[in-house]
Length: 306
Image (cartoon, rainbow, N blue to C red; front, side, top):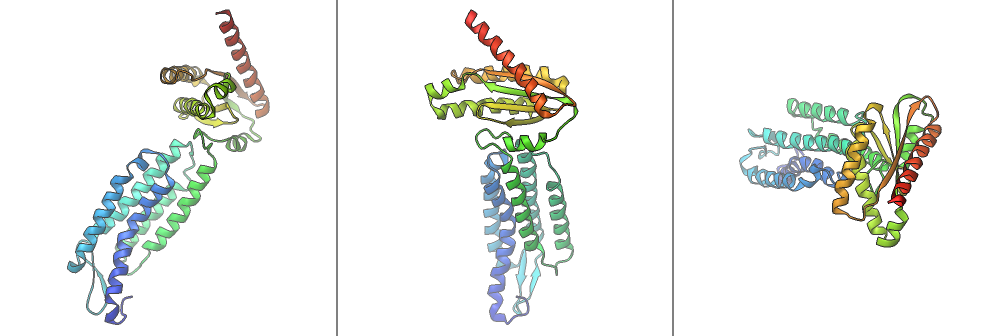
């Protein structure tokens, strides 16, 4: 609006106020809408308070031209404290970027092909905007960032099982399709007598049990492999390092015992494993299932003897 008749001056001021004020808010809103339950999502109130405080400061600074000014001839110029906007904008982008990385780790999405280029892209845009004030590229970049971030998060949510937060069966099939490799272990889990839990306590409590079991699986195995829910009460892990299987299994049992102190009806879980040695994934899964059913039957025999 620069250069228009002076009657448009207040419209120019309003447009710049909204532009400078809302640009940081976009990143905060993206965290609020798309990041579901990480620590950054829970701290959204702090970020929103910072944004509201910034909007109030920006509004109060208009008569003094601290961040920007529009003179009597309706010409925009930066103020002596324009850096406050730059700090807020870059801080909001950093908040979004770190939140995205943490969320990706939380949900086992290890693809960094989009996250890091996005961060570099926004950093470059910020530097360009500061160095070349005549270029107005902030909102173009914010728009592109919003679209790309939505695409990334949508792809990530589509890989997840809604109840447990583990990767879903479709993700498992995609990763294992045509897989023939040496090294690594397939670990399978099956909840014992789960139908009785549903029949006796109801499906809501049954879902609670599945979520708690999945939490133990992810807590123990996620750093060393990919964790999936592949059926109603069936889970599996693609463990990268076979040497860690025994340690992880023991930690899983400890985790389940801790959960069972709080949820007394939490069922036991049978598990089995099979190493990858060049076979098709179907053959490896069959061996792991056999190992798991041997464990399940042995446990039932011990229970009957007692």
